[in-house]
Amino acid sequence: MKAGRPSACTQRACLSQLARDAGYRLRWEHADRDANIDAARAAADGDLAPMRALLEPVVEAVRPRQRR
Image (cartoon, rainbow, N blue to C red; front, side):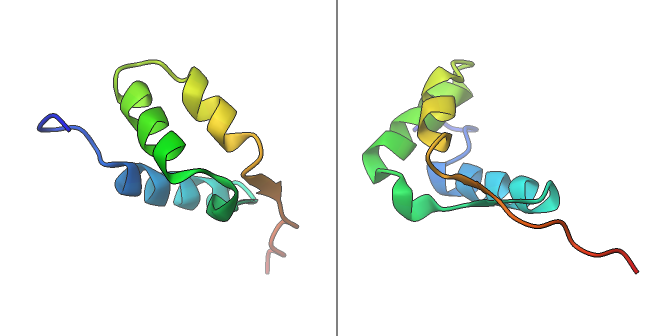
């Protein structure tokens, strides 16, 4: 990994937070570890296609939170 690039773990945490805030859950157990690392590296280089393919089976919609 080159200096200054986010790790796959960091990207996973960031994407999980973003998904949760948007009403989705990311089921990382459906993603292959090596594919996740490769997708994270490709995304850091501007190629989002591998990340999209990785996330397709991982994203799960959840019910929106009730506002008080």
